[in-house]
Length: 123
Image (cartoon, rainbow, N blue to C red; front, side, top):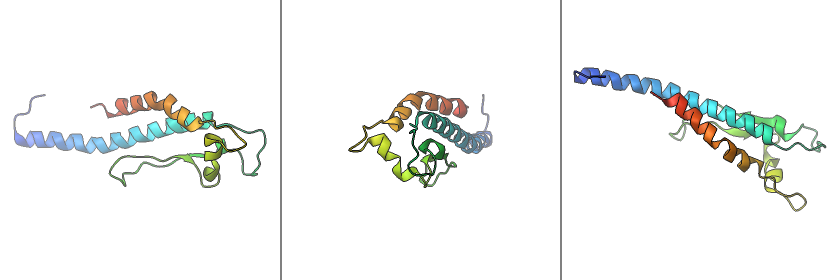
């Protein structure tokens, strides 16, 4: 691509900027959904529901994309009903060994999430 004048160059820069926000939001949204699906699959399910509110796996949520901190991000985790207790099976207690399913899911999906970002952000 040959640029012949400063106006053409500025128009090309504006075109790139306009498309970046949409592509960045799409890549973060798709990456978060993929991670959320895998996290739900890897979340352990007990044979007994002590709380009566359903299993932790059923309370996995993916939030919308925001740029409050200046970076594109989407929250992925458990809702307010079961979220406060998610760390017990993950980190363990005095009566339960840690299962580290959150960390394992992060490691398992890292490459695929980065590939989603790469595919969506190519110019």
